[in-house]
Length: 395
Ligand SMILES: Cc1ncc(COP(=O)(O)O)c(C=O)c1O
Image 1 (cartoon, rainbow, N blue to C red):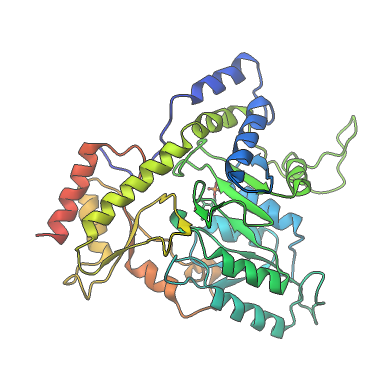
Image 2: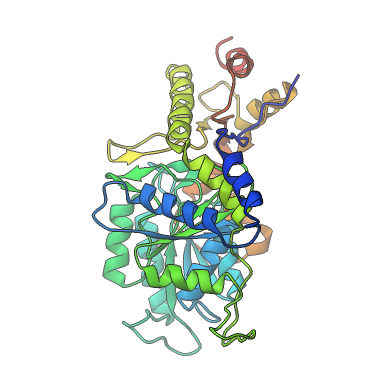
């Protein structure tokens, strides 16, 4: 029995043309026409109908994009960054690379993303502790600045950006948007990846489009994007020899990898449609199953790419069936499901960190499961998946 994966790479067929071109022209380097082409494709894709233009730097990963964003905002020791706890470590770790502290923020129930109420509470508390806000309020004692707010669009579902943006505007704390999982999603008609002063995309192997590994930094401010290109190629000053006036990183995407990205951009809209169709199928199945709820778009303003279809199982309503039971039953049939992200404030590595909220993300983690959601799932694979689900829920 072949393994059914949660989300596996799905090539469109056009990728090899760009990769071969890179070989044929010997552009086997961390720059070249595919890198520029991929960046342009991404910039125009996220612009969509926006009046604003966007710029993109192609990088080795989404984590690198978030890291460079924080570097450019000046995040350093004694500073604090407000991060959605319910996420992958790629969101949080760059804060630690910069030696700053994380204040973890809970999720709200509608989108499972950053809770604006908990965010407000966090900001008020941190200011009370003596943290400053760049350009607005000087810190006290040994405290630094509250440098950024980092919301995430989990599994493709846009966070409540209107409310988060209002808090950002009022407080003066910029948003660094983690759109790693949300390329193709939008909120009130505006694409995810365009909400931050800088935003990160990921093209990791399991994402909606993949370059095997890769990421991008997107911004409407081209200065940030040009600086990201500079920093991601070891911060070389303009000189014939190697001259460095600041510390750089080796984070630039290669021209080979970008070739895969250009091919994947040709099928991105299909991939969104396929993942949304998967979600529709699951949603029809669970419509009349007591105790199982899907992550759903709260209203017409939210448009998710439904990268992963995720459910919450309440064992008190399913006759004791919980997420672990479902996961293990699927595993017996060689089908991969995953618990939702374990909140980062519960991770041993972040033990003792500050957390703001009532613990909604903890409950979501305990009850939640991601279902196989690849855009390349075949009909016979869906039959196998629904056979197990039928056995469990519709005996
Ligand atoms: C929410 C989130 N943030 C950040 C990342 C980091 O992206 P990458 O793996 O490209 O570094 C990922 C994915 O891997 C992610 O899912």
